Picture 1 (cartoon, one colour):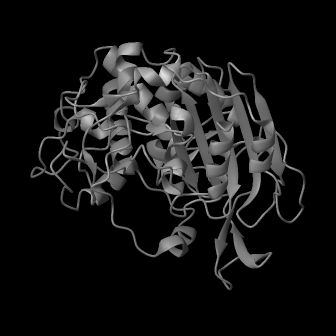
Picture 2: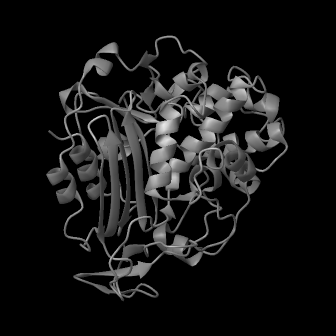
Amino acid sequence: MKRTRLTAAALALAALTVSAPAYAATSSPGAVTASAAAAAVQVPPINERALRKSIAGLPAPDATAAEVRVSGRAGSWHGVSGVTDLRGKHKAKEGARFRAGSVTKVFTTAVVLQLVAEGKISLDRTVQDYLPELLPADYPPVKLAQVLNHTSGLPAPKTEGGFERVYADRFTTITPEEYVRRAVLNPIEFTPGTKQHYLNINTFVEGLLIEKVTGRSYEDEVGARILRPLGMRQSYFPGKSVKIHGRHNQGYQVVPKGFPDSFAYGDAYVVDVTEMEVTSTWASGDLISTTADLEKFTKALFDGKIVPAEQLEPMFTVPKVTMYGGSEPAHYTSGLTELVLPGGIVAYGKTGARYGSSTGIGATRDLSRVVVYSINSTDAKAQGQNERGLGVALAAFAK
């Protein structure tokens, strides 16, 4: 991640994010951590005007609803905008559940780091040590640390057909083992530890590792270790269910005219994508939650109440490797992303996107500012994700 520029893509990926770093081992030589100067930078008072503006005018072409929570030493702010659905146009209310997308990865990585703290696994050992039948025999050794920070070189499954194929298969389930089998039909992308490529395959391996080491399902472990202890009563894993239970806003995706089941929305056409399977993202993206629950999780995580301080450090460490396919420096940590904001403020966070839903969590490391948002984006998977999320991220730290 370039620290001297704030692009839409970088902020949408990191401003309210905490994604995975690239430390090749428990302490990677040459890795960089949040500077001491970051702790000394004072976050500005909450700018309510900027925050209200960031979610104003909904429903709009880019989004139909949004909920934002900002808190920290300077106080708190909570805002809701938009409608629950486009046909009835009922006003959106606080506490709506949504698909958290890749924010799920933070939970998965946190459980792995808990297992490290308990001495049940070591990040210096390999995937082949713990899951000997998972990867092809001709793959090089892949350390768990490299899986967590997306420097593993493990490939993604090949996909075809774009959103049309996704929509046609929206009720199709896939097992984690099948997902990995499809992925590793492809060769390793690069020598593990030398590049960084953010891919779901890494968190799938983490989920399978959790199940192997604990003897329980991934969902049960996250529930027992994080959701229930923190009182995250509105958060759950849907499994094979395609529904979002309880209060929620409908999600929509912009599609070409004539797309099956689509209807006119302003100058465009959309299709309702609220009900979709989530097994294709599993430990990488199937959590359903609320902004209040994610705020509670973010505070507890950064405060060392979920992962002990020593094992938590990888979440705030970015390695000195470049991104796969280019020369840009790595910007993911183990579970989070680091971003330097205007004024020298360092924030860590994670965004997530499922069709119809964009989500973000983020905070300064000292929790002087915490931000969580949920946006019902009409094109959540677009490159750089939703500009509305970028606006929220900037507004949360604006003077």
